[in-house]
Length: 189
Image (cartoon, rainbow, N blue to C red; front, side):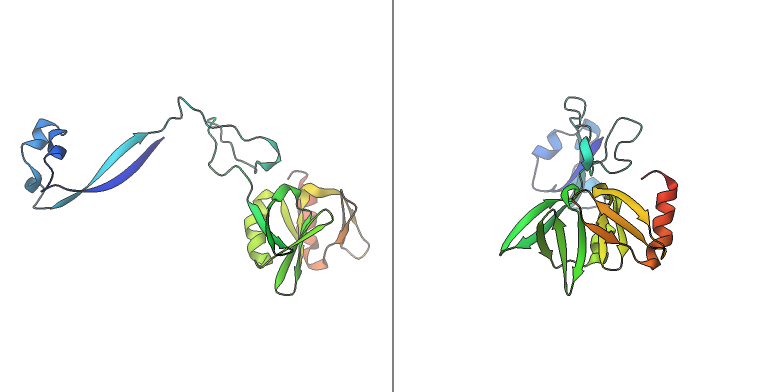
């Protein structure tokens, strides 16, 4: 992997710059470049991946497809952290610990066990960000962490009841039933 850093250099004021160039280029000087006073030069910086390999993603923070077949990992293999407020303090919450998120007026309440945190972000935005990390919108006002689900059962009304590991029970809306059924029939998430 090569990183490129770009730097501008005033070629008319620096002779040191031309000393490091090959002789064919240095003999022409700065005005050989169609009168350009500045040149944007590119410096290739070799990454240290051969000496210091990137750590392989481990644990429950790894989104699907984080490691590709070549043995390298994408730079974003950790799940995002949510910022919730409680008692005038801001808390950084790991997404794998979150049970579910629920709309509460102009706020979204984040449920982590018996604790509740508030954020001003919209549920739609949070749904877009968290969907690759096993979060599913089961109602227009509820975003559920599928990693916290113990089991799911179908209700007679066509809805689904989600029983979480910590004992909470959430019921989906009928509008979301077909998407939930597709997910459950696929057998893999």
